[in-house]
Length: 230
Image (cartoon, rainbow, N blue to C red):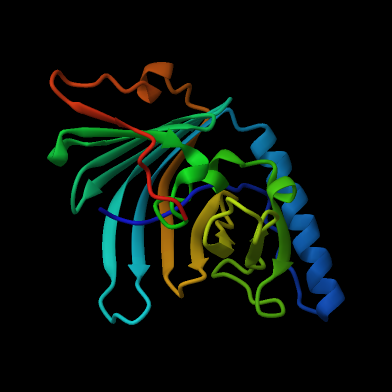
């Protein structure tokens, strides 16, 4: 079973930012975050393909997986792994169900119980409210992504508090032509790093509510409150 977190998605307008010092970079990041939040306030639903690479501390081999994510306001999210094995994660607000066909099981619990690197669900659900959930900083004194926009480093505001996950920071890159998130890298206390890249992004297509409803097959085993905690 793959490991990845919770909470993304980001959109905004592209202006090539010159790097003219630390304060200038900080202002660029503040402006970028405002544009991101404004864009997501206008995003009713979102879907994209994703690839995931997880580097486990102490191991050289990357763990790779892929699938598709769907989001709809208010509070709906579906995260489907297609490769190398099939898993489906359904979220409604803080309630989460994980269906693993191979094991004929549905695991139920709270989104806040998810390990940090299961999938970036918290960030995705919190789209349009970055500054409510994270402190946002420039990355490496102003490092930029491929499109010239500053990379954003997000620090969870509840870090170190009881019940918080093992996630210490998220580094996100913005897609310059669409202003959605291009990639996010989740850094854990353990040293593990999970990187997600998003493609084939579609927004405001009117995703039907039924996409977010899990219809359990006959005979599936349902297990309550057993999701691993970060």
